[in-house]
Image (cartoon, rainbow, N blue to C red; front, side):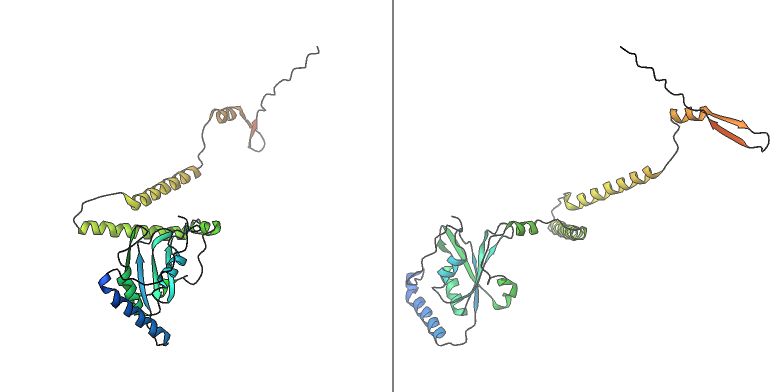
Length: 257
């Protein structure tokens, strides 16, 4: 099911607990939380992590579905920067932390569209400002300029930074493998970088060799030297070098037909 053609999730009229024996306790908890929100008491917000989200369950559907538990303040569905598709997990912030706990207890391992939903409360100290970055703006699929910016050509400085990061990650991987006693050698990025340096050094050496201008005795040069005549002038003791002119090709007259 695509995002455009996905039908909105119907809002449930009555909240039901997964365990029938806890139905009465569950309803009492929800009723108490709603009373507190109506009295305008100061509430502490709570954030939940929602994982294993099925395809077709996007921001509008998630907001509509979880609004039956309580007021949803913020919601962010993690998406791919390149394609805009869902990554399968989201973060939902409720007005009251007690509602977040109820939702986590109710929705964890809940079967939704052939997927077992994973849900748990995130501690307040782990909720960072970047967690809901861009949650207030409505989602739009990346256009071609956005994809072009993501796949843009890097400057030499950016390429150098990217190469250093890759080499650091690879060095950490080799170190972890060695600590676990795994003797595994692979070329990786370091071999490619050394190969590039070697080829660049060879190219620079070839360019320096090509800059050396040495006279070469070719047959044409030898013929020119032979054709040179040396004449002595009696008066000034000067040597005059005269070059014999090259024989001109005789042009035959065109025959009249």
